[in-house]
Image (cartoon, rainbow, N blue to C red; front, side, top):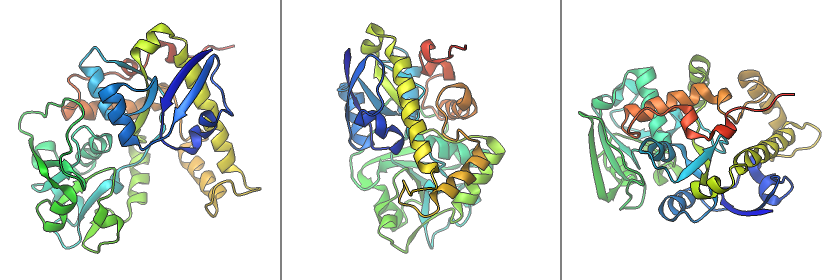
Length: 327
């Protein structure tokens, strides 16, 4: 039995694996739970865990520069549409997406996965190019935030970095016109009337984006330390199968109408509607069911200088996870 220690944030669809109700064949798992930012930092800087949740943007960046110390499996704990992650001042100059052109937009990191998607989306849908904006990089509400991976912004893209300011303060003062962030600014979270989402009806806009593009943005994946993987290549598929079983059990729970497994009114009906929109497996793992999303994301990342070269979906994951046996 191989002992592995992993770090992953709390998700219902990995809960049974973390608790031990689902087991990965041949592996004794010890899973640590902590905020994703801490997991990313500790895995990237110090490689403290045998496997860990990881930002897709940071992972793709490292893969593109070769000699990557990690190997991912096509498990995607976090997925979110990102039209909802654009914040503006209520009485500012940005009233609609086209108003972003020529403005100053803040991002916490250029390589943050949410930002990669959001920049790509506003280019796709609204024609706002990377060179149409002055980009500002700073911490959301703490100073001194830096990029965790190397990025090479394309020629002509204006990116200014501030180590002594925060995006939240700059937005409130009008020093930036908008910000794109997975984390909402504290001012928005505490109900400050001076900050709002650009898209009040973001769910409908995101639904239309899905229907038109078939892109369901993937935020995070699971990476293994390469040295551990190279010694035990069989762990990639065994972990993938275990993550899938844990996810399937979670989907059964939230679909149940007999008892409320999720403290949310009409949860089972919401699941039915999501299945009608996305299909029965609306949170798929694996390469092929996610090829459209992965290819779009990798294209965005290359265009934005997050990756050094255009990476293919197959390069992100070992060949053991590319296909399955059939009986």
